[in-house]
Length: 187
Image 1 (cartoon, rainbow, N blue to C red):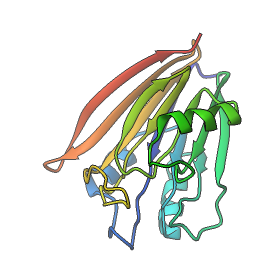
Image 2 (cartoon, rainbow, N blue to C red; image 1 turned 45 degrees about the vertical axis):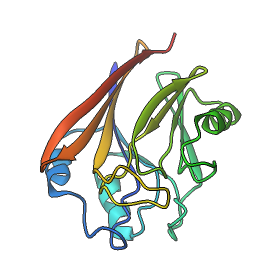
Image 3 (cartoon, rainbow, N blue to C red; image 1 turned 180 degrees about the horizontal axis):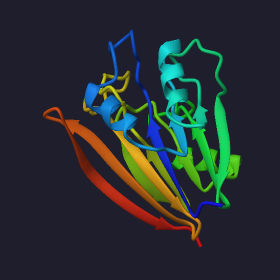
């Protein structure tokens, strides 16, 4: 059995509604990577995005966003090396990205990591024993609450030792830039 698992986390693509396509630099980068799982936090909008995300890994966890009319679950829960991970869109809380409310959802789901979207602004926050991960918008489109307007995604590495490494990437001047890296050890 493997001792390290690699994941890609994206969200809020809004393809064919607010954006025409994923940034070509991201598509090229993703094609050259090997992911064990991929998460999309919702607002895919179109079936071609769903098919594309499913093509990136054997395991995919994709939830329905408030703008989706696709047949997707409202939440997903999965486990990697005993670490439980939940995925929601994030429209369940107000204001958008409210960490205290997201922490309550994580506790109700029984997860140590909660991945959400909806804000269109990425964040990595550790609160009251819960790691919150939001990849922002993979296309950098505007959201109802604003957003960073910068395309972004997150890569996650989970080790059997329960060490979790999170790296946030953004597209700046048509180049992929590592913006932030965080490491958490779940004992």
